[in-house]
Length: 500
Image (cartoon, rainbow, N blue to C red; front, side, top):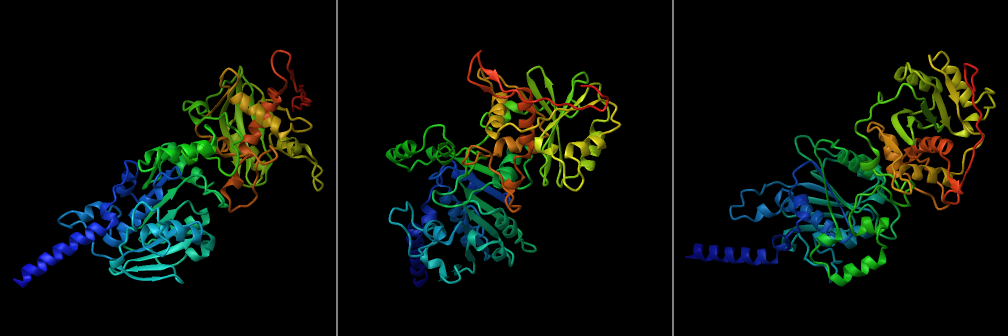
């Protein structure tokens, strides 16, 4: 009889705990569910603000810590056979400790800062917690699982250590933190990487996710998905629990069509953060021609080679102009400026051609260096001697203004009547990345970075070369209509054959 009573009491206690278990009663939205179900090694929920991305991340963390699996729902099935009896070690990372204290921790456990308006109780009930130490920021569960709460502003050095079963990011970390923490693979055990991100940081928070687009989103969209990587998205409209009045308030805050609205509310995956995109007319779908290759050139028309003399990297692009259309057929990059190596590689790729080679580029390359007494163009032309086709220099004495150069490129990308006058070969990956990621600065020019730890420091060289070339052939105009005057640039030209 006592055994029957004990069993009945256990069933009653289980029912009571299930009723108080927020993770058991929580139902993911249609957009959250695939992220939670995913069993690939790395998954990111790149979604709008207030779309429920942090809730989904918290559910995954809590499930792995409690049940040994990332999807909590099968753990509540009658047999319980899917629950693994093992302790795990997890890092839960936020941009700053205050953000972790106020956002991620309250979703996981009662840290004393659970807001009254939180739509669900913490996903880890108190009866499963063995210890919480605010000094160490480590939560220990009775089953032995550990959740260590980390902050990106600690720097990468504090993300070294023992192996982890999961590293979870609430908003994107700096790349150095991501790179270091995702190396915490333990022998004989699988590690999960999970992230919940909006491509704009929370308002008032300094930082951004400039590395996430080129390293994760761009390859994923280009069907070059790295093994084990899956991306998910959602808009604010996918969250059925938000009040209509609150959505309307946010819509009024962010103008329709603005990057903030497209990212924060609509959840679009846009590369431009922390500033306005420079080449707003560019669209991968419109301007990248999958049929183009290095050999897609007309032997009767000149090759157009445009250069930028940045030291690291030195970006160059190769084009032809077919009527009004600029056709990009190749890019040639030297990670460190090396004009002899650059010329040698150009010779290798284009050993013969039936028309001229026109060289465009940065006018500052004309300046004579104090030590050698020769300009970059003089040195390059010397290394190109012996090409079986004429080489003609088409570089102005002075560069056009940066705003004029940007406007000339945007006009070629998409004209007043919607005409497309630029197309690129898909293997011109850095040029495409420039078009998608280069930003304007506060003065209307181009944002530059010399910080090698910032992935953006690689940007601008390739589209700068495009701008020099287009501004030479089709410069911007004063005014509009038939009376507009072209801004002419002086046209000095040099050729080995003595022509021009």
